Length: 246
Ligand SMILES: Nc1ncnc2c1ncn2[C@@H]1O[C@H](COP(=O)(O)OP(=O)(O)O)[C@@H](O)[C@H]1O
Ligand SMILES: Cc1ncsc1CCOP(=O)(O)O
Ligand SMILES: [Mg+2]
Image 1 (tube, rainbow, N blue to C red):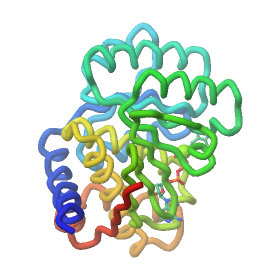
Image 2 (image 1 turned 180 degrees about the vertical axis):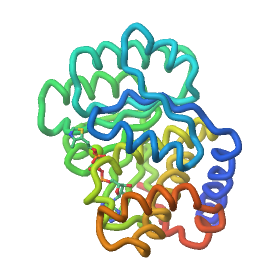
Image 3 (image 1 turned 180 degrees about the horizontal axis):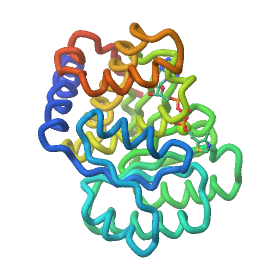
Image 4 (image 1 turned 90 degrees about the horizontal axis):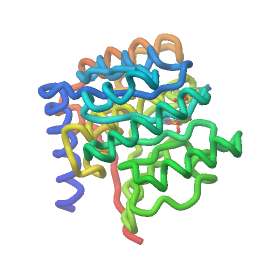
């Protein structure tokens, strides 16, 4: 279908646009994967920042082109910083994404995730365990990642099959997918097109990296190399995507 081809060609063009515009992505990020996520953003061509101080976070959010709100290793200071940063994103109409890490483990974290969702992020991205418990997110693009990434907005569902099982054996690939979606949203206001571009880029880079890896350890470095070397034509040649309504 023309629409399907349009999305893939658009994804390839967005990769070039990220490289050209080098968007600034501010990440309120858990302490486990900060360097992995920063390195992944930089490899693709974006400019990461990671401050969570309540004294500085509003200035960083104002300077950024997109915001990532990641709930891993959540503490009171991060909660306060997230509230300050998301207020800036909303008032400045900047795209922002919520990753409700481990919200299925903690009722207080689930409640905070739902508070953030009610305040209108552009995108909510989580794994199956997180997305199956999170509940309604009206008007938000919901993305459930896994072997097949499922992107749902209103009654439209896009499925992306690209990726590799090694990704599930490297901590941070989900957090990075959210950060890459933010980078693409910084250069494309249509969040479905932006998220499709980011997840195609990530999944295809992973497939290329896996061909050069013998396990999750070598894969992690090869994945970063593949993100840096990925070409728009790689997306067009390898995208595996389908669409459904209803
Ligand atoms: N079995 C798999 N095959 C292909 N890609 C996968 C697989 N499992 C996870 N991924 C990819 O790895 C990334 C992390 O997904 P997921 O594991 O769902 O999130 P999290 O790391 O937050 O638990 C996503 O980009 C997803 O597409
Ligand atoms: C293991 C862990 N614990 C708190 S945050 C975190 C990282 C989660 O990363 P991802 O969801 O991308 O696997
Ligand atoms: Mg995760």
